[in-house]
Length: 262
Image (cartoon, rainbow, N blue to C red; front, top):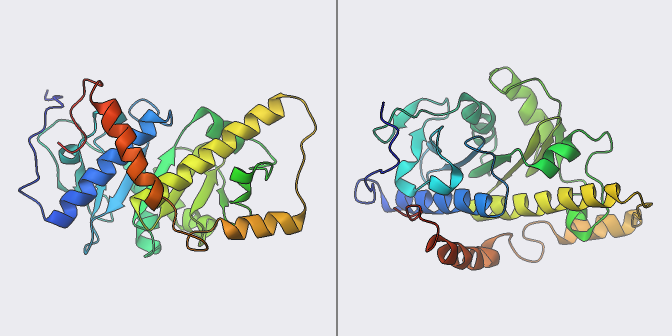
């Protein structure tokens, strides 16, 4: 069995646009892990290759901190593998069941992130859902959906309901399951997931305190949510991404894992 994680570079074998997407997606996987949002070998982050309907996804068997630009698998919208490193690792069907339908239905979406974090799962089981109790969580007021749990996401019929529940939002809480964000760019999807995760952590902490929770007025909620939408003041993720990459570079030097752009 070939379970090596030493993959030869694809830099000279793919287009410059695909290679850049691979590097950014691999960096996103590493950042999700660095910020404590990974779950062993599970979950997925996908990105569309510019100018195509092809997606990049992780091998099912690698830690997020092991993922490199050259280890990513190219699939079509239906989950068929178009190219993959020489390995006995495959892909997780849930990856394209959830991600594929979003990429297919939402032409404005180029990246999708799904997580199973402790705080995200905790909020996903709360009847109250995500509460607008912090500035961070208020940005999602009126701008996120909910999807009922139907078991492990392997049923293609569930795709229709996922799309309806997501609507035109960039954020969705999968009940009894976890969190999902999407965006026009990898950077935007990461920024949104970071903020959603932070909101869930703050909510769990606040509710655990046993204290009464303060909710701002409806007018303040609507004003704040509007001001935090992408493009209202500035796009999400663009300014932050450079700082995140500097942080990732510093951490990568001592990680012992292959560099993400390998």
